[in-house]
Length: 256
Image 1 (spheres, rainbow, N blue to C red):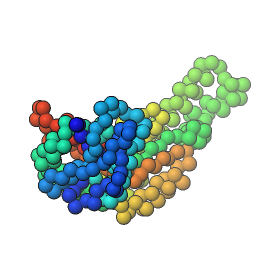
Image 2: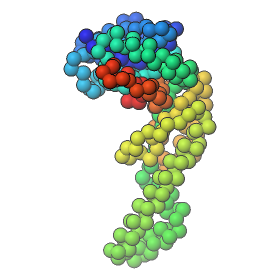
Image 3: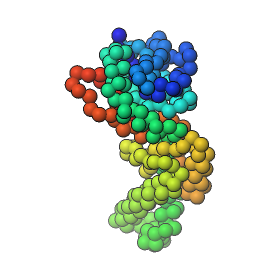
Image 4: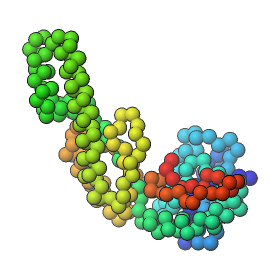
């Protein structure tokens, strides 16, 4: 039977809680495989695995519970090996790489921060900061709304000013939060977010990082900030050496 892989830990890690279940319906029992100084947190793999909400949450829950007891290198959702022996072989082949990453990430967690503009607040800010936009808006108001071309011009100017402000705010948020973190990773662009950043933070300084986020929130009323964490360090796992053809697939740790 195929083996589903959640993450990799050091052999000294206490492992997931006894009786924990993971992906599948019925949910498969989670267990550990050991090879040298490493262990893999695994379960039997369902035959019809799909990225359904239940299984995505189960994958994340196994990693969260395991990560609460110590460092875990998270695998991408859907990481499946042909069998237990194949997983053990990958652990043995890549032991140096995985042990180095475990040492580097020990005691650290990930926080993801997303930000977007509060539309009305940023429009007020743009008007206050841009004399040209403010002047044209006032001229249109005095003339009963302005001519068609003036309305179009004002809309284009406001859109350009907001876009410029998005770029400025993205840089500023990163600059303000980065000193409270050990590392930062830029996430993929997504509609609606001007900031999508993941920060690697030492567990014992998490309060300092959260306080920094709160300070940015208070000082930038035109921004809506969302913070998610602590998480396993999904965004800070570097893939190991490439596997030879025909070997175990899906054993590169990384973001989901």
